[in-house]
Image 1 (cartoon, rainbow, N blue to C red):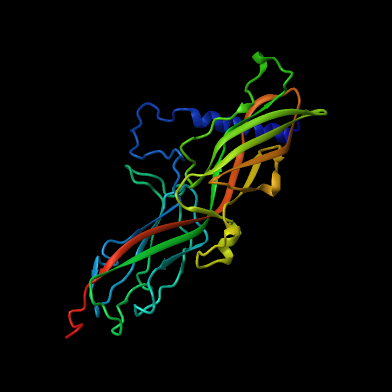
Image 2: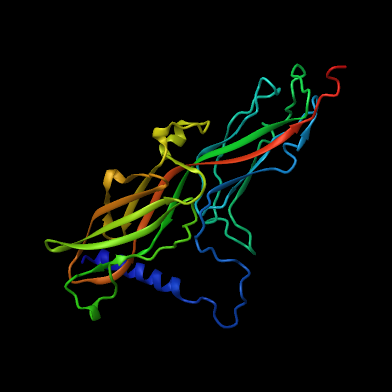
Length: 320
């Protein structure tokens, strides 16, 4: 191996050992910070602000619609939109438009404290979705329930670093420091709505080297929809065609040994929320045996929804 690869491998092993060590030494106070285990299946979570809209509305009285958008995932949101639908401009005085999300930091930057879920919360609609009322020309003869729906679409990613194994198959078991096969990963999600739920490594001799082959199952673990990441940039109202949905892009890299070549340029199509990636091309020298973190990144767009309703009360002047 080259000197550069030796240094990279040494640093990676040092990182793994350091992560597994207990850093709480004698004389140190126990921290109140809740450590982030990078599990979970949430990205952006939306909630209508209490009373906005009110549960009951009368004609001639203005109201607003506000949304809290909370990034409960590990990674940041850099691009996307948040939209309100079901506010019919034939009935109400103000049409509702989509707003850009901007950057919303995740748990990786804003960690959990004392049971808080971490991540940044942003409020939308304070200036743009206020001052709405029922049009005077629209009759309300009986108390009428109106549904209201919100949706957000955003670019997101899932990152994980499980331990892969570099090993010569001819090496004795007692001399090997690791084994290929099924690789352990967090089964409870990876701090994002799309997760790797199964990962397998195979080692195949290729001339004077060994090739590492990775097969993984990818799943949509939340209740939203997966869309192409590129569609988020070109679609500002979160309306997507069927052909834009269920695409995840996969990247795999082993530090010091380069990137893998994944089938279909890394694009995985999910069927019923599940798909498979197959990545090859990483080669390691024979005669070696050691574990090394494998960098896996999933990139995709995600579409989430929230629903509520409000009642427009009967206009007491109708029929007078």
